[in-house]
Length: 240
Image (spheres, rainbow, N blue to C red):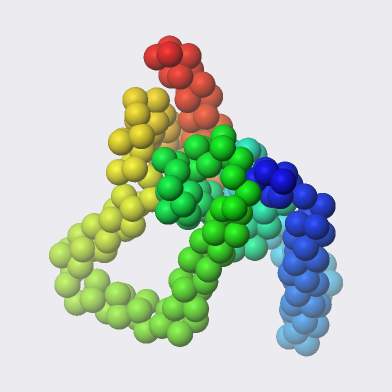
């Protein structure tokens, strides 16, 4: 068996569907309890349905970026595992970084090199790196999230403009960990794709601010992903 044959195997599909079925069951139970609680508070059925419909519409549009990410991720790690990761806990940026770290740790230059080699011995390492790596953040949020948030809010309020600057630098540092620094050293195509995606994002923000089309903010990530991938094909053809 090869790497991709395992990552697209029937047993993995079955296990993923079982896991997602459990998550879906939890969502249904939570919705049922929330509905009952809303009725206890005196809300009418029409009012509750209005909230449900507006929430559903609000969730569908931002999820377009997740769907686009699914298409790009499944090309690297197969359909079921990409489906599972982006449906439960995960993001395209994190998943690709974690999988790439597992591939480089196994001796390959990148995740693309691992997929090209189709080495089945690294399947477990890729899955564990993508799964266990993010659990620490989830557990830390449960244990320390509230204290961290209140501490950061208090620091920002006490420090004024300096506190706002520190928080902005902190966010920029988090962003730098995931994409720019790595992409710049992966070749001219990756660098130009990164620049193109950044320009597309800036253009979206300018249009939103200039013309007040706030609904466009829901499509910024999806458009940046799609047009960024299109530009990658263009830059690759131009520079090859």
